[in-house]
Structure formats: structure tokens, C-alpha cells
Length: 389
Ligand SMILES: *Cc1c(COP(=O)(O)O)cnc(C)c1O
Image (cartoon, rainbow, N blue to C red; front, side):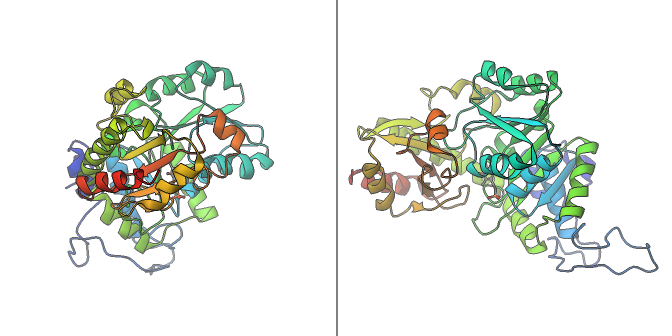
């Protein structure tokens, strides 16, 4: 299939075919792992589009085409990790520039903006993006970047991409959406006018908890040029084997997301009905605040469920976190296996307690990344763990 034909196809077809061509030399159906650092030239400057492995690699090119196809983007640019992708975007700002970001977001993004870019004179404010007045109040003339995460991490708040895009553009700010939680199967922010989509491909896109990677997708030639310049000049590139593994993951993304969503819905409904559980955070529950917006903005409610026990002590949360057998206690999310995480001490420990509490992140919150195992086993595991409270 020609690259220009792919964009008109369904998302499941794009997942399998976008960016993929049989190998021109051998006809290999799967893109090989081009494990090479350099490329032969017939005479100086006479080459087949590849000169040096930091700048580009055919396995990476195939993954970039695949991700661009999934996000309805003109360009996909791959990085060695999700934070490297975020870092490259922030490097395009200048001292004096200002970032407005969601206050309920990936802890590493907070750490990067505050602790790495802060000392270079790039300031950042973190606000509840479901409250548009707060976003508008935080925007200043120097605000150059709106950093949106939806659903947020770990409270799975849903924020309105359309409104934030128009707000950002009114103030001449670039709007970037971290689409790691939703994946392009459930939500495609570029189709809603966002300038940049960022991924930690480590999560659902890779999908098997065996590779670290990141990507930016965009329709802007100017942004693509800036980011490719940074790839060449600063070098946060993924290796060919990492690209191969990620692409092996993206081919099954559509079917995996279907099961993640179905299992997460069942788990959320089980927890909501259980008397030992206090609050359940999942956009697929009609009782959840962001449910209607999620139903409008997304093609499914995702695989992340967070909850608080009725007994809100840390000790009770720790007992549940230590008792499960199918759910593994570990950082990260989006793999085929179910994981559970304690944000306050694990993924979100780099956000000061005061800011965590202000954002509504309770110290006893438990976050689940619901995998694709048999639904009844996941529910039985949680039921058993809740008995330890
Ligand atoms: C994990 C994650 C990141 C960072 O990605 P890495 O691949 O771990 O560097 C960024 N945003 C979100 C939402 C994440 O979950």
C-alpha cells in the first residue's frame, strides 16, 4: 500500500500497514532490524538517503511512518524515551519562555520542566486543565507551550482538547498533547487541531514492557525540522532493535486496546460496587466526572483505573498493594500484563507532597494498569487482595 493511501484506511489497518513496505532488497515482509551505524556511499554525497545511524535508520523510518499513520500525522519522529521526546520539545523554547501544564501529569514531565529547564530560565505552572478559567489565568504573554495530558495520570481526569487547542492558539502558544494513556486508537489530538502529539512508546504502543521509547507526531513541517535537527545534534535516538520491538507492538495495538478497555471497565465496575472501596477513578463509569466528555472525545475509556479504599490509611493501601498475585506491583503501564502502582511513593514521588495534595492526589491512591488477562482472574485477584484490608 502506498503511504498516501494508508491515511484513508481504518485505524486497525493503519496499525498493521502504515510505514511498512516489503524490504526492497529481499522482499522480507517484516522490516529488518538494520543493525548498522553507517551506510556506504558510491561517491561522496551519493547515497540512498541514509548517511549515519544517529541521523536516520530504515527500521526507525518504518516505525516513524507507522506512528505518523496512526496519529493522522505528516511526520513521526522517534526518540530513545518518552522523556527524551518531551525534552526535545522543551529545548525549542528560549530563556524567558513559560509553559502551562496540567497539574495531574506524568511525574517525570514535572521533574523535567521544573528541575532541568527551570535553571535555564524556562518557567512552568501546573494547573487543573479541566478548569478552563485556571488555564486562562495561568497564561501570560511569555507562555509558548500548553502541555496537555488527557486522561491525566494518575487521576484519569478528562480534559477538553478542542477548547484547550483554541485557547492555546488564541494566545499564540503551541499545544502539545501527551497521548500515552489514550493511544491513537482511542484519541487522535492532531485531528482536533493540536500541534504536537507526544508518546512514551514504552507503554501501550510497545505494549509488552520490554522496550523504552518515545515519539512526537506533527503536521507542522517547521516543528518536524526543529525536532529532526535536535535528533541529529543532541542524539537521543532509539536503537534499531528497539524500533523493531515497538513496531511489533503497534501492529496489535487496536486489538490490545479493545481488551484493555473491556477489562478495565469490568474492574472499575467491580471496585465501584465493592463496600471496601471508597472512590473509583475511571472515565468509563457513568458516575465519573469526565464520563460525558470522554464519551465524546474518545473511542473507548482506556486501561487505567485508580481507586481509594474506604479505609484511607496508607497501611491499608500497602496491604492491598502487597497482596495481589496476578497484578504485579511495579512502575509503568500499558503492557499486556496487569500492574499496580502507588503513585505517591513510586511514579509521582518527584512531585512535592504539597503540590500532589493540591492536585487531589491522595497518598493512599492505588493506580491499576489493567492488562489483557482473563477478566475473571483480575477481579478474583483484587477481591482476594481487598480481603486483606
Ligand atoms: C511513562 C510516561 C512518560 C515518559 O516516558 P518514558 O518512555 O518512560 O521516558 C511520559 N508521559 C506519560 C504519560 C508516561 O506514562
